[in-house]
Image (cartoon, rainbow, N blue to C red):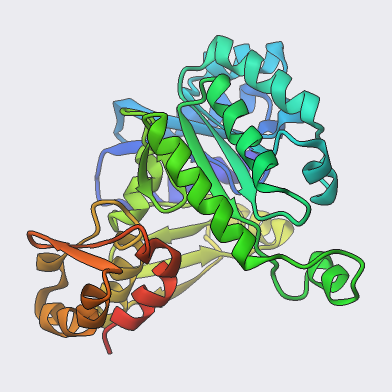
Length: 338
């Protein structure tokens, strides 16, 4: 697999059209299973093919149960400078409900160890889990603050169709998600983190100054990116492509010198709608001048939301208000151009 990833990097040499690489992200699975030697090999291949910024943000996703002193030392030596840790919760009951492999003690231990080697750490937290009271959710937030984690990605628990969780809820084996409780958790999160000096720079992302994710911001700003590996997605501004999801099919194709992907060319309307969808979720909002010929159409669609204070206009930007953040997806869809 690592050899195939290296080969795809070489085959994709022209995709970013000579742009400098500002972020590298090992994610979309469990990349902490890679050995430090394999991580180093992939980074060396990227640097040999692409111009990588000296200040590049290089993130590795890891689970708490993968973290101990030795891999932390090795990841740092390999060139990783940011960790994204899938904590989900510091509460044992939540982790058991979500069938996570790690426990609450491992979460705390992983954070304490990681702080010895990395300053730039982000963790995922899930709210709206059935059985999670608002007081317990506050304790989760306080634990993260006490650990001095500079970046939090916080998501409402969602139940995807045709998943084991959806079936368990449908057959009443598990309690259903309560949207009203999730809204209370979200407000509690916004208020406490704002008080603690965090910036909610995107609806689900909160950071101390200087610890915003460069990688995620690139997505939201519509920059080109290259995805490597099975299921990986790439985007160059006018088209999107995604690799086959099957590992063996992926490796076999790469060995023959071809990248096994499907491609979708985006219409001008689709490009505009993607910008609306992502930009509106950020605290900078969407810049009207970037809408081009669709500016008036979007402004007209935004009128009802400007009147009910879901959106405010700040100079030449449309920005969601606190109330509007609860309706972000619906508002974005209402602003889509045809």
